[in-house]
Structures are given as structure tokens and as C-alpha cells.
Length: 137
Ligand SMILES: [Zn+2]
Ligand SMILES: [Zn+2]
Image 1 (tube, rainbow, N blue to C red):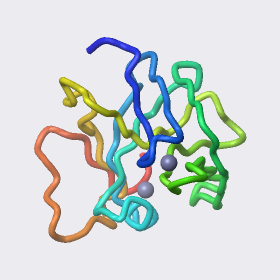
Image 2: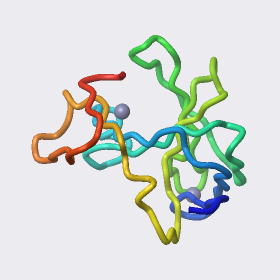
Image 3: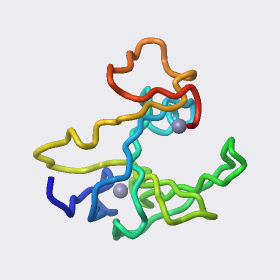
């Protein structure tokens, strides 16, 4: 895989260039992510803030996390697509909502860890060979 990788929101108003491989890719099965993703789980890449550049206009929303931190989110002001999450107290790492386009090899973005499995929908089976956590590791 060669970098940078480009991604964009659903409408293309917000774009990003990811300049290095994510630290980790995780699937989160918590009910908040189910609502966010309108899917059984979200897929998030843990990325160093210095490894990614965004362009386009983003709005911000936040909610308190179970840990007591703030979960802040950036989204496209045009299509509303969620772009990334971050902790305002620790902005060195961001949680990118992966939307890469046209990758020849997408396997590097396959989740290697599954989080909040206690809230997982009954009909999804976790693949073999991944790390499984009942809650936030
Ligand atoms: Zn958009
Ligand atoms: Zn979640």
C-alpha cells in the first residue's frame, strides 16, 4: 500500500489525505455507533493527527463519553457525513471514520479488534482471528 490515501465524505465537500498507515483499525459495536453508522457497527481507524490533512468545511458536535472524557465529532456541513471523532483534551490522535475511495487493496482497513461486543446485534458473527473486547479496552 502506498501513501497518501485519499478519502472523502459522501458528497465530496470534505476530503482528506492520509499520509501514513493507521495505528489500528477497530470495529465498535456500541449502540451509539450503531446509531451513527446506521449499521451493526462502525469502523474507525486510529490515526495520528499529524498523519492526516483535511480540507472542506466541517461542523462540530460533542457528547460525554462513558470514560468521562468528551467525545467530539467533525462532520460535513453539506451532507452531514461523520468524518472523525476526537478527544478535545488529547487531540494528538483522531478516530477517522474511514471513507477511502478506489483502493486497489482494502484489506489493510479490515478491523483487527472488535469493541463493545456486549452490545453487538445478535445476527452478526465476529470473524475468527480478531481481538474481541466486551467494552472499551
Ligand atoms: Zn459531504
Ligand atoms: Zn462505539
